[in-house]
Length: 158
Length: 158
DNA sequence: CTACGTGCAAAACTTTTGCAGTTTG
DNA sequence: CAAACTGCAAAAGTTTTGCACGTAG
Image (cartoon, rainbow over all chains, first blue to last red; front, side, top):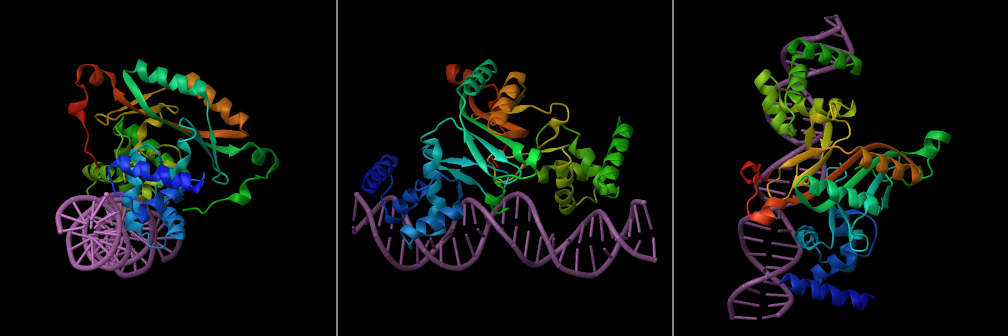
């Protein structure tokens, strides 16, 4: 698995026409070592664990490489920093439901939604390239019983 | 019309439990003087035209008032600054299609999309509060004929 | 009159960049 | 060895905040 990744990463860097450095490999390996969303800073921490020589600058320089090649997706969640989502490789068309009570994020797919979005885009005279649906919602259980099972998992506010 | 606005603004400020100042009134009037999206800085310019004493600080302090009360909606378009959309009052459920060729933004509504989004949210155990669909798309005319009628309307990159 | 609000300028935060030194191919 | 890359620290750009002064109620 690790060796497999190393090969895929090298091939990716080759394809991008850039050099394969220890830092880039560590950053990319870290970027796909989780299914959670993370910020550039959080990715720096993860990459540093694999290779302590990785710097913030290189993280910020490598991220656009991954985003523009479609491997990683930039996510705006209304916070001052951007989030990155590594799950678009496996689920290219997923959407996000964000709990307003605990900030928990649920990813979901729906082919019918997809279809309608494409249909509407074409009717407006456009060819859809990237669709992004975010739903902010409150936990029904919280409303009914006064307790949200996700509440304990509340993430940091910033 | 103008007098009408003044009354509505005073009522809004009253309801928020804050004082009605010349600066706040100018900012709010400016905020709803257009159907275009704008940044905090652009709003400052617009408000300054109505009352030159308005400062950047007060704009940044007033915006959350409008956003939290639901009159204005914050929009993340992948740019380093946030945009504000004054059109949710008239069209509470509209979505955004953004042309990747010229950055033009088309707003559209679709009740069927709405319904499905709500249905999915409930099935996941949530009560939807705010739905936000952004579609990045390319102009079909550009693809077919090599010319995009919106190209000339291209907005500033930042 | 006093609590709330304002402008100014400095600070905070994320992201970008210039530069001198290092490494890849 | 030359071109590409890196880390560091400074810079850039947006948003927030402390403080002394002003003003609404």
